[in-house]
Image (cartoon, rainbow, N blue to C red; front, side, top):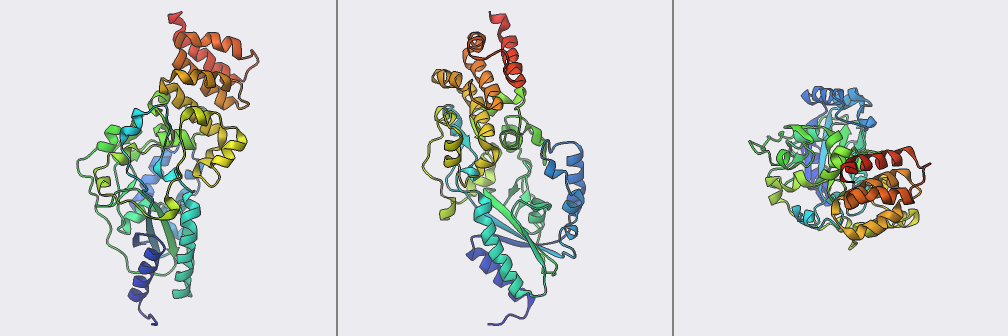
Length: 380
């Protein structure tokens, strides 16, 4: 049946989006609004840390019309990735690493983007004179505020998007259009007086409601931070080796979350035992994490995180593999292994360093060695 009206075409796009796995669909005006100014303020306080891409194109983020010339509407989309329920019980097994739920399967870009492109092709057919641009967490757009304006949910106090009676375990995507579509009613903030996410944060990264200092966030520290993890946050990282879900776990709205049955998001049955992960060489790492989002931090970043987690594990069985890892070819890994051994061995660690670490070792490694010596000098 030929569709003539905009409302008919929009209803058709909504149905096709659901067929493609997007449970949420809404339309917002292509304007940054007050969020543009808030973003400028956030970047100005250096809360983005080393995420230099967040500092690029700030005007585009505030004005979608600079991303796609003449943009009038943004179709915002939501896709559920929750494959299992999660609580804080993972903290009770410090010898096993914890990975954010979204990273337990195939890289979400490889799952969401082809479906988004398929929807974009449908839009191009229904609106032949319209120009579009699609993104999955890759473009200079403020996707969460736009999703709130599109009615998909509200930006919670932890800065994730939350949907009433559905939660926050989902990915976002958007399609910019230079055609005007009927706008969806914006979502209303339902956080109320709750601050469970603020209270649970291990590193106090949520410095105020709706304000995240990424430099303190465990997701940032284990993924975006490329070099040495600051000493002040290592104990708080616990056994988290890629991201952190705590603020989402405690959000009351996630008690309504429904598991997805999408085959693409089902996690493989693999072990996250820290000692085993520390033994991964370059080839084993590439093989294990082929197609996984974890591959983006490379072996050096991942084993850095694993070393920190082992230092927090209290596991005496980790001393031997950590000692062996002192000869790893990557200085960043060795530096964090030194810290881990210091945590597990205490005042006995310097003797191990004297035996296993050459005097000409990398400066980062020696800095960690001196730090351990200084912390335990009074025990000698």
